[in-house]
Image (cartoon, rainbow, N blue to C red; front, side):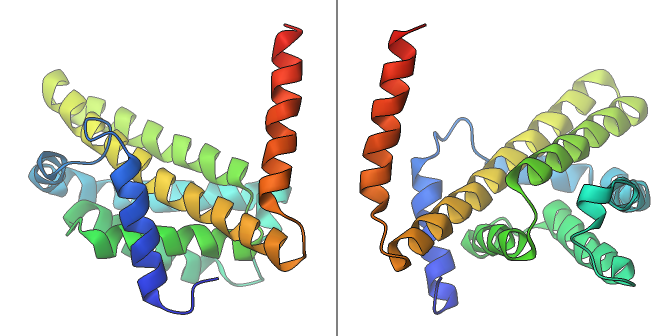
Length: 193
């Protein structure tokens, strides 16, 4: 959809500006992740192997992978995880997350699959932090991770929607007409509730 990386940067910047500042990842959250980087690095293998154990044990998620691909996918997730711990959390980082959304879509990974695996990852950080740190520190780390997760998910979700709308336009269907029809349908249904 985007002819250059500049397009991903533009999407990331646009999405970032729409997120309420108190809900998105902040510089203080980056400091928090760096403060607990040793703990996060210590959980890396548990998270990486657990993530792919789940995906490869379920036929619907297993089907998006090619034979012998798991080691490469684990390395990609490992690279992502390490950058998520260390930063920097700049526009390049969030543009990369927009690209990740496109890659997931290209690979046939559904948004629902992405969301539940994000949920699993968030849950792991919560559990591991609460097993390893005093409660107030575990909560601080979890909140920082949660805001990172929410910000990253916003980037990837927006890219999926934009790619979908772009494909509709390419096929001759007006996304605006579909949007209008969807709004009318929702209004009609909500009046019946």
